[in-house]
Length: 62
Image (tube, one colour):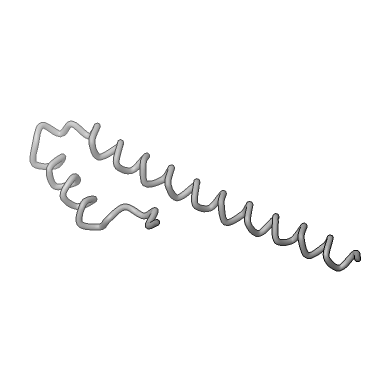
């Protein structure tokens, strides 16, 4: 699953924010959601790496 914000979506929201009433709520929500997805993805990668490392240590033990 792609965890990054789509560039087109980002610029659409940014333009809407700049040309509208300058309410940045939607833009901030978009950035927070993108950051959250990125952190979850990084956490999953780290967990997989740690799990693989533990498996390798156990495997070489026996």
